[in-house]
Length: 291
Image (cartoon, rainbow, N blue to C red):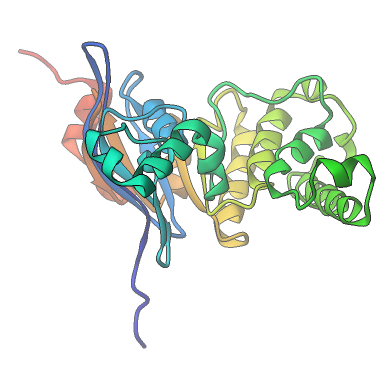
């Protein structure tokens, strides 16, 4: 039996981010395997959320490349966010128009459209919308109808809207929040808000989802539920999961691979068993004894 060839859905090469004189990320290199659950860990201030912000279009890196996708359909996220104009572009109209398009219209929404979704360390739901409205608004990019069909309530518009409602209820059922469909997001318990934000990201049908500290503030029972949900995303919905997390028990339980950051640099990358016994990682988290 021939073993399937493993393929990375994400390749980060020499990712560098500078804020003035501060180097937040320094030549970061790692890959995320398609169909895996990969964790990004490290002490506070290591640069983990900065990595996520670069991957999902909220920051543009100073240097480096981020290649995302599979099966020949790969994009360079840095190009999607817009490249700087150069003198040579004046001699190549196609290059000038291409760069002008992404400079004008590029951003995190184009990254999401390419199939890379995320949640946030601090929950960013629309508080004054209901749970189902939060899941509906996430699907605007998939709408197959325009302004005119909406104003005239044409059959195509109604069919598209019904698809979005059905998908929203599907995900409410998956995260066990169907009974709260019409409650305001701000009225939901904290743990329910965490799950709702994950469901909202999944409503765009991503190839990969980035979860930024999804277990923060959860009690042990909620953390166990979260672990099962993350595994379902990978096993049943075939989504690659990339997660930042400080709960090491959760990380070791669900992860196939772990990337460790410290002071903006990758200091280790491997399977959980290797990482938890790595002296460099232990020193970064626990410190080293000085004589």
